[in-house]
Image (cartoon, rainbow, N blue to C red; front, side, top):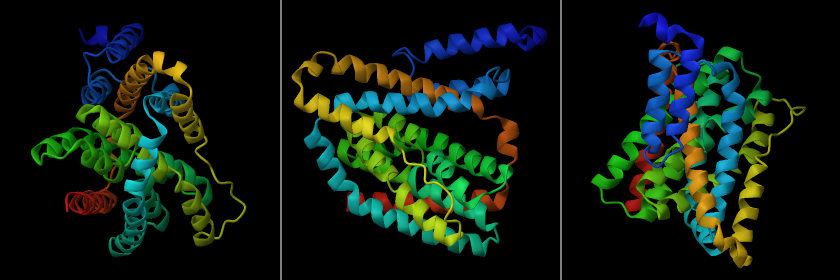
Length: 311
């Protein structure tokens, strides 16, 4: 039996079957993530070397698809609701991250990666500031491992807390967008909670992701590296275009439901891919100090934003 699961063809077949299952309505976002992680732990990921470049592409395409489920007035209302909370939370996390880095005596670059990932949009923020601050490959991997691990936890506990506190769709969507690091987990958790929560969470999170640009500019001055290029999340423009098309061209009403349904399936597949790139070996590389900094930042932004939202 052990030899059977070590066979490369068998492992690839199991991976493909599970990936297809994640595209069906039978599998929710947390289950898709858990299936990916279970696969990585039990038999390993036969496509791990090739998946990373496709994860972000699939995520971006799926988010653009969700844009066809939104009207412009809904997007603007959500953006206004989350603007102040977004600004305050980003600056709070970045400043607290700097202080905690000093207290725990973390390397300045690793501390900055964790802070940026927590403050803005997880792995995307880490990818954006990395060429500017030029951390080592190990520091980038460690930052991503911590962020994705906490994302995985959030995907399970946020909906449970939301139901426990009887949060409304609007409250939960806003809380997800601010408190969860990565866009994939934000959308996954909000989608599990409800369609209205999904709309708000997606819009606020993408508006939050645009803060990559000013934060990258500030990063250049902090690390004295003005030659680096800023990575702009251009796919957000396509998301806005999808909203405009769905708002002003009635013809899109005929297939907007189908497109958003396919987009949700794409997000489930993305989370399966993310789960399959995690492993026990990856988790073992996370040290106590960087994990402690990340957890404190995460708890601060989660609890602080929740108290603000329900007050």
